[in-house]
Length: 308
Image (tube, rainbow, N blue to C red):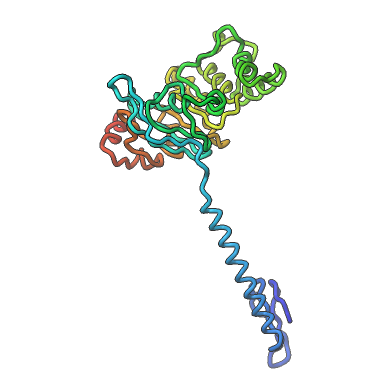
């Protein structure tokens, strides 16, 4: 039996001279006799079976679903007779970046605060990483550690240094030693470009820098999810870019994020999905190009026409 692998087949012509033919495809077996032909068929069959198996494995890989990190079902919240959230249903996959847009007072921030249980919803189910939680949970403080949150205002302790702000939760909540906490604090401050300011105080740095410290403080707790509640709305326009760059970096690293923002450029560039909320309801959602370029709901179109 002769096996051919990218070599020319040589054969004798009528005059006995050798002539060259085109290269034979790889892995083709040519039988020299009738007895060898059955072996060739067996090998061909095996190759065919291997290709089918490889294709099946590849297909199964494509079918594997990315796990859900945040699951919200029928979330409702009201103050007296005023219903702020109306049966919100939302799922966010691990590593997904979801940007929430909508007019002021539409319930976006309240939804985030309910996810982190800073607000108590009267109705609905919230699950983080497969664990259903409620305000009555005995381990609520542990669950909150898995959900970092960055607010409009930085909420840094004015009497503590930048490093002191970052390691406060690590020492007081996680029980780390000061040495361990400082080492992690250095990594987080370096991540947001603020390590050189570790020994200064909040009043000595700009608003954009304070917000980057707030992000470092949240990341230091090693959360599985990051919630951003209009993190750039209180900043001067020239300071917005540095904060957005940090958030873009987190997105590229695979952090699961829900971002409430009016920064439509950020939403278009970074979001996997955009959700439009109006009067406490999810009105429309989809990929950024769908929402911004081909929104279907009239209310979504009206909102975007005023800000784009």
